[in-house]
Image 1 (spheres, rainbow, N blue to C red):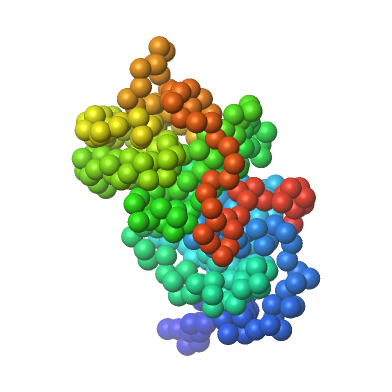
Image 2: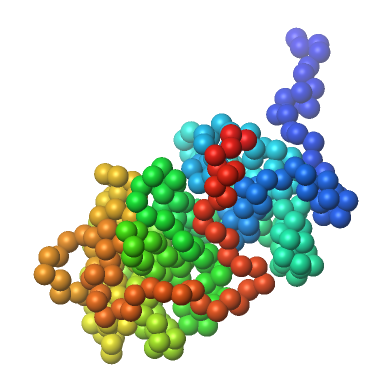
Length: 335
């Protein structure tokens, strides 16, 4: 018989002490963090505010020399309430830690940009609530497309992601017409390509996916700017099925040239693992040499599109979008 049972508190994992959300938002506490935060720490906070959630693996690939150094620093940022974290359920193995912006991080961003923290539109309950969102996998998957591009550029692969807008920023700019999952620009070998991304997890009927095309045609007509639309699918089979619906949807438009389309799937990335590779298959073109193109080669499929130049669009937000790449000096640092 057990005469001296183990106390319940002894079975709990160690949780580092953290200030309360109220204490983490005070001016005194924010001032104390000023000497502790690096340029990379502030970049992480901005990326989390822009893109809602990033995993430990994504953050490590973008901004640290190793997963170990990333996890050590992210733990410190967690303790200081610059970031918060959770680990979703996984049916087998364990999911990576998922990070969101926390109270102190939001207050720091607001003060840096001369805003009252209340004007930032941040609420901790809403930020951490994504843990239970039905769109969690969709958001993480969308972000994976772009964090992979950033990580590849860090490894010395050709090209650089120069612009990356979140779904929320796209909604503020274009939401009265379309709501893409992201907008981005990629530069490689002296040329640039911009695009909207539709990230597909196979949850909609193909005809429902194709029903989005008239809205993109309307956007091109309204703005006078023709922007390619790229679709990302989970499998090659899903890509083939939706391409048939997209072909029909494109043919039904009055001006199909207003919606340049290309598709790819995760199956096509098994060779090199980068969305910048030769994986994108244009739709509705009459090229002499059909086949998949590199991301930077896509403009050759649509010669009627004007070359990318200037800024993406007038800024409509109080906070500018963060640079997709972290400060170079802090990436080289180990901490």
